[in-house]
Image (cartoon, rainbow, N blue to C red; front, side):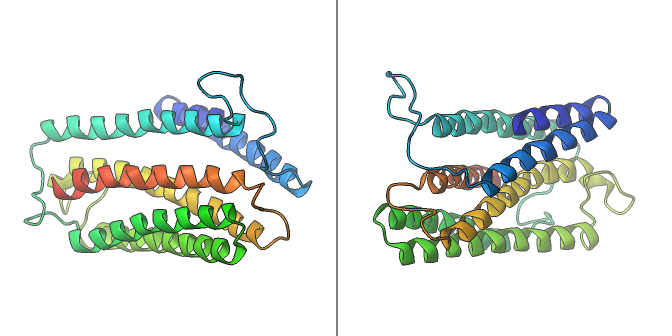
Length: 249
């Protein structure tokens, strides 16, 4: 449902904009069904439906689905980065990093460290629940959420400064028309990544709420933590590529 919503929504952006609202509608229906199941007590648990014997033997269908989703995300970000690099080769002007670029490299470097650190705390959260140490699990999970919120907050602060003070917009403006192509590619790449981080923050918020519910996550039943962790690590890896490409090269 979520994939269908994304496909229809983006198709609307490219072709006929009102179609995007159909995508939003499908997204709402999908999420509503998800939350309805959650309210009824349906949860990620032990591997109850393993795949057929073979390459993915012993891997749950949910985890396999998450891996397929992440592969599609690799295609998605590869297309965005590739398109941005192609536009860069045709742009009449491109700001040099650390010279005439409006981007705050030191601040973003700190933000990069924060996001990488959140991957470490996510690993610690998974280790905690695997060992049955709820205190370690909850503290590490809370730390991951706080680090994720910090990353998004710093990015919002940077966007505000770039947009209103540096006149870096995703379209041509009369103040800095030379930055039009650079601005478009910057917001396209970092904006979609930021949206993915925000999605991860929502998932982490859900995990943190459920972590304090008795017997929701146990040493034997914690696949939801692992799946959100896979997504979160993917978001971190993407940023490790985006930071040098957008800010340093």
